[in-house]
Length: 161
Image (cartoon, one colour):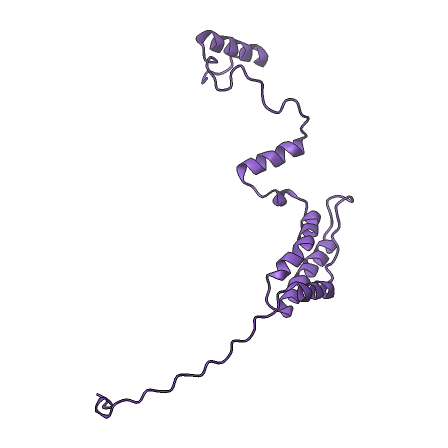
């Protein structure tokens, strides 16, 4: 299929001629899936559904396809799970304050649409309280094991040297 469309011939006529010549040569015989219906013809699929399905097949994170406001809302919903992995109250507060700073920066930017979703701030104190109640209790302090008494060395092995 390296030949070019001759001038003066309509595109449809030229393509139909290519197809009929291919049928005559048998190029379309024994194709995989021949004689079976095409999958997915019975359901209605929007362009968004197609794009999401394609991204999932390609292994792309579909969260990257969301508008910035929804990304921030989704991140706010995931804050308690992220805070549960942290080890100190200061780290939880820093996580929430960083999120709030990014939301405030989002508010200051002009939006592409007046219907763009607007994320809300995270409640820092509520997140810290939730972290305190859900974190496991600290492990008990290990009991001090007395050190074994020092062995006396024989007098003939005391020499350094």
